[in-house]
Image (cartoon, rainbow, N blue to C red; front, side, top):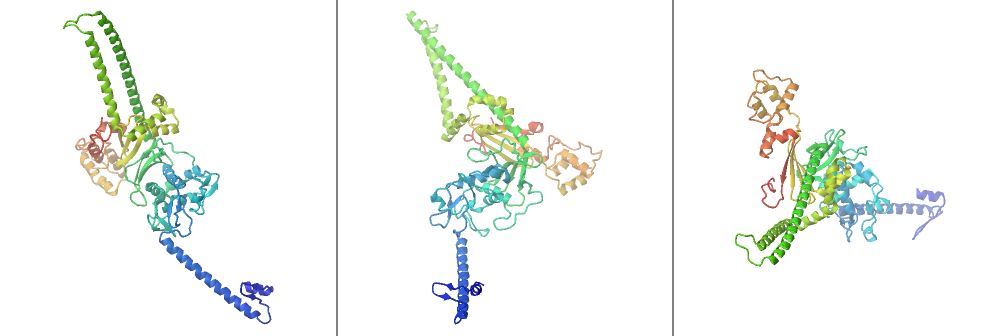
Length: 561
C-alpha cells in the first residue's frame, strides 16, 4: 500500500543506495517491483530476527537469568545483570507488608487502606536505580506507594520473594536467590490470594470456605488484646502447632474469634480451631492482673526489707555509741555470767554481716542465671514502663484504651502461644517479661467444649443401643460425646430410653466424673493431670512454672511452683 500511495501521488522514494521513481516512463515498473521485493525481504528478516531474539530470551529465562522483564519490587539485579539480589532499601518494606497482612488476619482491603498514598517504598539512590529498572509503583513524595488492590495482591503472591524465578507464570528455578520474606508469612498470604498453586493447578475451596478471604467493607478494627505485632515484627500471639500455623483475630459476621489454623499440609480447607476473643481476652486479663498483684506484693516486701535494714543499721549505730560510753566507764572485765558490751557489739556486727552476705548471695544467683540478653530485656522493659506505673494500671485496667492495653501487654510478656492439644482443648502459655517476673511461665488448659459434627456411625449407635445399653458402656462406644450430648442427639433422632434401664443405669462414675465430660475428655485430663473442679466451674485451669534451664522435666520446663 505504501508503494501504491507513492505512485498515485508521484512521490519519489530515496534510500542510501537507490532512488525509486514509480512513474518513470522507462523504469517505473521495474522500480515498483524491486521496491516490493526488497520490502518483503526486509520484513522476512525482521520476523526471523525477532523470533531468534525471543527464543534467546526464553532460553535465558528458563535458565533463571534476567531476560529483560520488570524486576520485582524489593529485588535488584547483580553487577552482571543476570540474577536477583535483595534491594537493601526496598526488601524490608516488602517483608513488613507480608507481616502486616498476617497480623490483620488476611484483610487485604484493610492493608491497602493503611498504605495507599504513603511512601511505603522510599526513594532510591542512583546506584541502586541502575540495577532495578522501571519500578511499577505509583510515585508519591518521598518514594512510591501501591495504589491498587491488584498490585498489592501481585506482590503478596509473588514466588520471587521466596527466592524462586518465575517465567510465563511458572517457576523455572527454585532458590535462585536469597528469600526476603519469612516463609510462614508468604504461605499465609499465598493461600488466601492466589488462584493456582506453583504447578498451575487451581486452588479449590469448599463452598463457604472463602468468606474469610473476601474484602470487608467495615472500618472496624479487631478489638482483640492479643492482636498486632511486637517491636521485632513477630505476632503478639503465636502457636507451636506447626511451622506453618498461625493465630489471628477474625470477624465471622457475628463474633470476633482467635483462630489457630495449620497450613503445614497443602489442602483446599485447612484444619482450624477457634475461641472467642472476649473469652480469651478475659482469661488473659485476669491472669495479667494477678501477675501485677504479685509484682506489687514483691515490691512491698522489698520495701519492707529495706526498712528493716535501715532499722538494723540504726540499732547498730546506737549500740556502738552505747558501747563507747560503757567502755569509758568500765575498768574491769565483767564476770562470766554477765553480758559484755563488746559481745553485744560483736553479735550485732555478725548478724549484720550475715544479712548482707545473704542478700549478696541472692543477688549473685539472680544475676548469674540471667544472660546478657535477659538483663538487656529486663532494663529495657523497666525503662519503657517504670514499676511505679503498675498500681495505676492495676486500678484502671478495665477503663484503659485498647491501644494502651496492647502496648502494656507487649512490654509485660516475652511470648504468648495458643496451641490446640486435642479436639475441644487449647493451651495458652504466657512467658512473662522481666517487668512482671522473668522466671514465671503461666500455662492454662482451656476447655472450649467444641464438639465436631455427629457421624452416621455415631447416630446409628444411638438408634441401636440407646434404649437398652448401660450408660457407661454407651459412653465408651461414643468416646468423644458427653452424656449431655448423647441425650440431646437421642431426642433429635427419636430414640427413647427404656424405664427398666433408667437414666442413671450403669457405673457412670467409674467412666467419667461428670455428665458434661466425654470419655476422651476425662482421659486427656488424667494424662495431663488437670483436676476436674476448675474445669467444670470455669472451663480453665492455670498452672505456674519457674525458669526453664534447671531441673527440667520431660516437657523442658520446671515443675509447678
